[in-house]
Length: 212
Image (cartoon, rainbow, N blue to C red; front, side):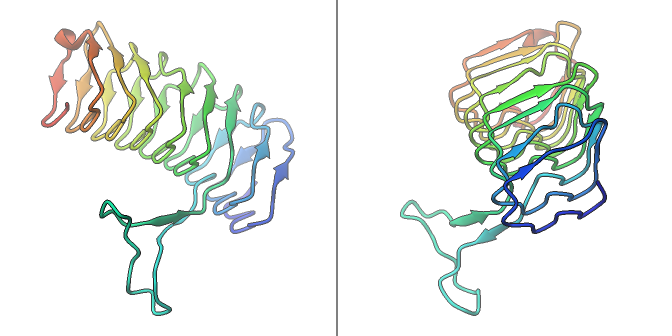
């Protein structure tokens, strides 16, 4: 499936793929109605494949006055697909921003051959609860930023974790790091206010500024 193949197909709800499908860059970008796609036989997922635009909610036609919530934060609209679960049994890789801002996504199953989660791959997936990261070697910058429902992560194979990879993980309580040592960049677990248990932290090769 080529780049931008179904970009902005806002009414598309269900997709059936053939075996060994390769999903190109931004192939299903801004598919706000997409709820069902079987990715279990997909060979690869490209950059931004299932992501979407994020906009300020504006109060005027000239788009200059942004709406603000009662607690003082800007209000946004999100246009990524409405996927709830993703199974990647055959994929060898996933791209940057692949599922960013899929805010209804709760469950992800990864192929054991996937060893890298690139930058922003699951950023803004606020409902994500279940994903096995125990085979992942490299985690990119902001990979799970604002993944607010993750309560525990097993990073026992991780050799490096990028900047702010789990920032604002509001539910995160338990982390298992590699006993062989992990290189953690700046702010990896910043603002994870419920984090109480970090296993193998004493084995870390580097703990970046503001990591906790």
